Length: 264
Image (spheres, rainbow, N blue to C red):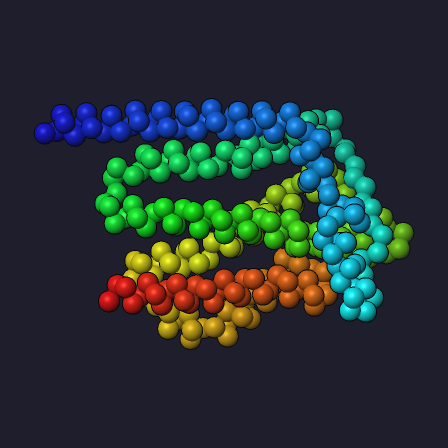
């Protein structure tokens, strides 16, 4: 019996090794492909640094329709500097690795799920697939929200902000890319709130009544988080960030309530 357990352990370890190897190969292929499409990749990343970006044009159109000229973005063109010899090349590699990971992430998820699936019961398998799909979609939605709303307006505000008229902002390449990637990851994780609450409710650790009871506290907390993430100071951007996160909280209440009723 002990020999069978040891043999089974090493068999699983060998399967895991093969899965991880395939995942690394896929990631490498995706990263190399992203590395080769440098112009397209960095054109997308630096799009928020010009006034031709779709979000700025959308806000300008809204201003003309509503008459809110104080919110009109106007002309804008940021410039960047590089102060380290290897920074541009290393930034290219870092961005290619992240882009490659995003491109092949569906394949990675399928491979990892295929490794875990044999250990799951049929009921658990039925729940796992929707969780993976919804979790992935919500993460992508959070990243897109950051790219089109949060980061562009936050960057624009901070780039134009001056403590003294003789102090000019010169943004480094690494600072721009690092902040864009960090905020994208942060918003992607933040949009996983319904999934986390569902898992907590499934484990019997969270009740819908608890979320309802602390709804007002949650609204204040969401507003504070939104204000920290978007330091632009205007009410429109703050609302655009606060509203989706609040809707995720309300969706969490419905999901947890449904989950609680099923577990009774």
